Length: 420
Image 1 (cartoon, rainbow, N blue to C red):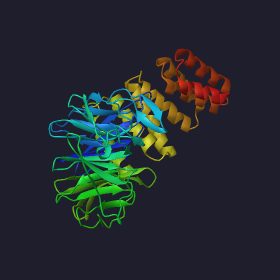
Image 2: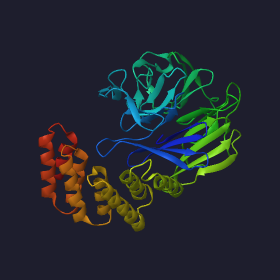
Image 3: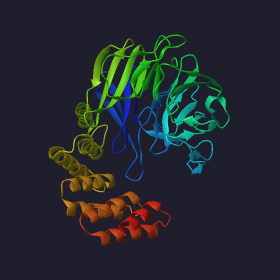
Image 4: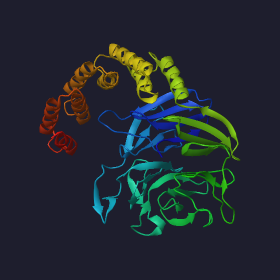
């Protein structure tokens, strides 16, 4: 899915995998109202599907961090759902060992009572759809096609039908499965056999009860009963990563606009384009930058605002010399406002390396390692920078020191073996 969106009242929330997981809150004109970020250099994160509950809490599926993140209406992370994962291989299939573990959570839905449903897995999964209480306690695991222990084929998109049932996109098996909220399998939904779905990965319900499905061949409305499948719109779309229907308006989020871009558009239920709210990466960065500058020193600390500005120009926009130069300025201003910023130092080291200033970059990596000696990602980046600087012996020493601190690290061990 690699990103998701949800609409509530006059607010649009959409998420992207940037350096960290990032969710933007915007109004219907596309003006950015808030950025919610999570993850760090040592805590990998990503963005899958999003949803909101009745109290305005935002739920974000994090397939990289292997958890479900929950943010309060102020954008503060309030809790996570999902136990620490453990895996084993059985008959060549990767299975989770117990209920409550979220293996690659892709999408999330919340029912009116606050119960949480999570679709998990990139492979054939037993626990591909799980239900949790509002407090995050595991309640049940759904059986695929009603078979105990039945596997799901890459569960992705998930939505609540207004009729009180749950719809799940079973991507690798090319079908939609429908369940009751109590975990009972009901049926397989889809078009006639001569018009099959192809890897469906997102679904929403249109006002008349028809389904709108994002699949690898584009957006389609599969007919219910004897109705035939039809394309949703004649407009040419890039890679659709999520769809959402709210108050008779269909919102579509696309990726790969140009090189890395994102586009958010709204359509009427007949597939006619109304307008484009976010027209591309530069448009998004411009709107996010305007919000950051407006918030600087009031709702947002200057160090945090300058750091976010730098990240947008460093990692999101094309890596031209002017964008990297602006990012460097932003990082320096962030450090002037808060001298001990670890994440800022790390990003500044990266941008200096990209600008060919290796010695300055190495100095910053070493400062970061002194601040967080247990951080494996910093140690790996420093070793890589040393290798680029033709100092493989020092790189091996950095990795060996890390293994002494953390003898169980397979990542450090593997990189040290690679260096020989």
